[in-house]
Length: 315
Length: 288
Image (cartoon, rainbow over all chains, first blue to last red; front, side):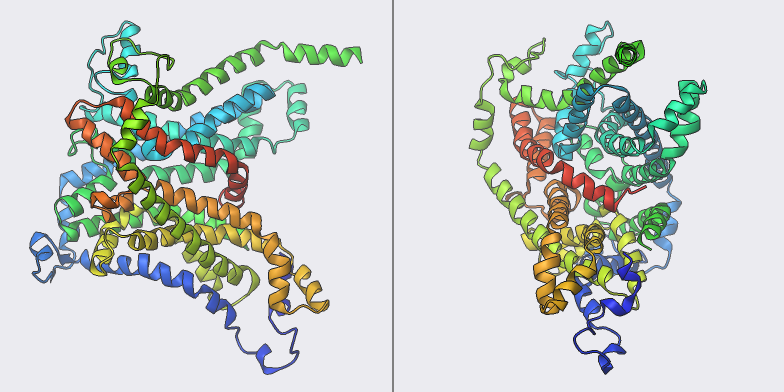
């Protein structure tokens, strides 16, 4: 890293010292960036511009069949945000994302503390269990969970019925609240391992001496957690929580799979599936683009602190 | 000596520790159960799965479900599609990201900071906010339902974070090593390929694994771009089973066998490379 701060040493001037090349701005770095920038411009840059432009056009079914789109300014946005359905979807998405992120982080921290509290063998068992869940491809996880919650033969209904509650043939996906409960269970199950491992890595950085000194001074476990552990793992906790919020906004695959398994779509849509329905289902690219722009702005705003954190690390 | 053993024993039999162990075992069971249930169900015939009492061990199980799933003939094409897209993505992504990582960690140039900033923001953009426009792009250049179309979108989605990961590894190789080799008479290019490049191997492996897992498991973009059945990747293929389950009586044994076919290779791969991957991810993403 120290070598990087002295630019003269990294320029290719060593072979021909003192010539004009030294003062000319280097071409090499720009050449090296060409492929990456080209693919980003094609696959993300162009769609971004197209999407922004289309969000100001009337681009519905008629336009899909060749009629030229017409400029309508911000009419799509106005129509979108005067529709109570949009606000319902936005509200549900934000609530879902905050609840899921909070539950995931709390359970993740508890699992990390558990990893620290138990012996080597138990810790290994716990870590392997977490790794297995982490490694499961999202679509495979979804099929398994849909089977677990299956209304006829699912083991969840069988267990609850066995406990004396009547869950025979209970359909979990019919009612929105119960649908989101199932989705939350699944998303939390998938996301906890990442949080647990990251926080556990943070916990191992806290020196034993500090904890022992606190214990000798008579600090209760609660005091030790809130006055020592929590402040020391705060940086990693903030980043993990922020990433979780951002990731829980994009739960398209999970929600789509649960809807495919037989849930009503209109009352269970979140932002991703709603855009999909507007764009692919109703072929209204104008409205879908407007909502996509909203999602992108929301993500960029949320990502701001994360990016600032990474930039600090870079410099 | 005796006092320390006594202290150790007291610590070992703490009731708090025992309770923690019990809780840890219960948590492990809860997290492993879905994976276990997938494997268990995949070996059992549908008649057992649809009986009123579940069978918790694959007693009387067989590989029939796997045979039946593979006999449908749709698995191999989906596997081929997934492999083609994933390998294309990994190969191009590594080359592009490696070149860009060299640029930002070995040179100081005008626009460097803005490029890094852009890369970090792009990395966060969700597919959910772009797939309609990406669909339109691919349809206008005739790349819907093609390996190339999806791969281009995947490369762009994975390259930003890969650049960021590799940047750390490139910066970790001291430039003095290369300079020493140049003093010893190697050219700059020779010095790079003989000295620096071998030291970057772990970084390339970690980035390659990251790109592989992302492309292999991706669902959203694939769903939008690959709409024809014969071009489905494995996640889309698996989704077909669940979708069918909503409309007719499902053979859950076969669905779980299909799920196992998709999941087990990834799980094994993940467990093998896990150490490298997490160290790379932590170096890039969550270094506190």
